[in-house]
Image (tube, rainbow, N blue to C red; front, top):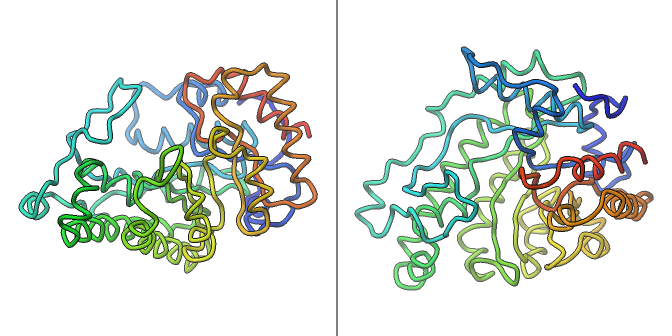
Length: 345
């Protein structure tokens, strides 16, 4: 693996910042990286053949996250997912009105709803022998409640359904939410899992996809149950959600009860401002805008990241990372300039 640092993973360090305390050292957070970057950090490729491809891929991710200096490694607990007709392969953008499969009561009844219990979660046990001391997994979902409902119905169709057929809309949300909740109930029980991630995009640049009233009625109750499931298993619950969530941040913090919030954009609210607004109420994760990382020099990236770490140094409750994730079009050296700000702080 790449020799970027001498630190060892310490999930307790990450828990400390999620409690809005000052961590022992500058801490990193990322929802996920990308395969070329995983191979660069781990300094190896996936084997050409494997009896357990899912475990082999997770081992590669663990090696990469360890090499980069994270206290956890990201994963999905199984291949549990909701099937649609959407084809994402090779697409740089995806329409929220493509691939929907539920349009009425009949298609709702006919849809093959996934059963979380029927999937294989053995990777969560089998990875334990390969996890470094002090490291745990952050278990993500196959997107969240709202994202999956939009994929199943189409965004425009959902907006109309909420007003013309609210009972059908509620049935879809409840069926989706209950299936996802069962998935999280399963993964939260594994010893290797230390963090629960609810990844569910909720908004545009200017507002939430649905009105705050609809979010509170259909979406938040299921996320509250996911948070309660995590906490019942003594594990923090994190939210990844893109979009402008200003109108519902009090709900996210005070009513749903998430321990950390991820995904920030400079065009909505720079992480520096968000930190001043919410510090002490919820841990803030990442926030260095993806567009900024792409278009800035390594020196500019390091300077901004160092300044953000300095801002949070005495107050805590912050982990350094991108505002969203690390897609392949982010220059790898720019990503390294970001994390080195924490490793060398």
